[in-house]
Image 1 (spheres, rainbow, N blue to C red):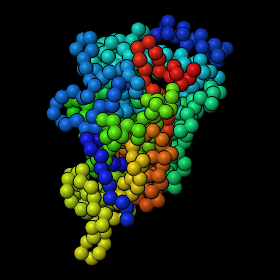
Image 2 (cartoon, rainbow, N blue to C red):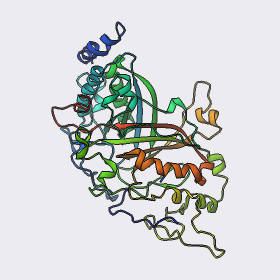
Image 3 (cartoon, rainbow, N blue to C red):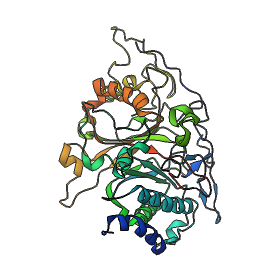
Image 4 (cartoon, rainbow, N blue to C red):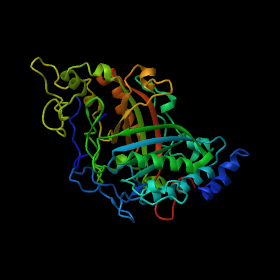
Length: 426
């Protein structure tokens, strides 16, 4: 649970109707008899809070500030995180075919290209809501189950797979998995909601909802790469890869991957927090569990937020200043490849019809938590070793529990005249 830096750290070693017809000719017929923003280049890893637009941002036809859509990589990964993001998981309808999946992605590419640029879709039921995108980005990712669902597991990349089980997990189906995952981000929650409804409605009977998880960050005039405080008060997102190019191999699949070049892996973890017991701790106990000062996120061994910790430092009594079980120490990379891009968001659970907070009722935790989105080229090689260490001995496990988990391949970006998934689903 830990905004990207311009320089990498050297850590010390550990000791619509027409569109409906298009889908109707596919899934409707198949069932029937039933019914990126992309970036040409990654932006700089960090942007100062100087009020300037995010790297790559421009203006739409009506002057609205927009993020670019076309390019070899989808936006929403290395672009600065906006104030609001929601992840929407969908499952393909029973009997769906590869052609049905292609049709969905073709329609979404057209819709995303319009919505992100502040232009209504061709069959937009609320065009007024499309005219102020507020830096809207939409990313599309496919879970391995999508390939299995359409009977083409052979098209799934070898690096895409589920995470292994972790002893500290308490995963629930209602927050896990999914054939297709949409990541929708904007400075405006209204824009997110409109894009969400429009895209899901546009897919029609071809998909069915699985889950929706909405998160928020500290509001700002524009999206920006800065560390964020989560619901526990912890400064989250300090150590990140450099996004200017040197660490691209940690986030994106490269030219050696052929048609999957420009793809990434999304690992989304829903982490429930027990704030009731956490808030009963004194500041020193909280900082010991985290390994950083609450005031500014600096390591307990001193310096500023981005100062590398001194893991050899001891107290007057000979104890480590940074506890061996502290979250920071357990999450630190032990090898250069154990790094990945983090986009953390806080969430507050809604209530079910009986009036009780869902996770408070089910897990005896307060209805607050973290949506931890990690992006990497290879989750098994980069993410899993870190998560294993956290599961083995992270003091924060006393107050946190992963209740949802999802892994999906973020599709490569598109150029004008192409549609998402065109090459990888050929």
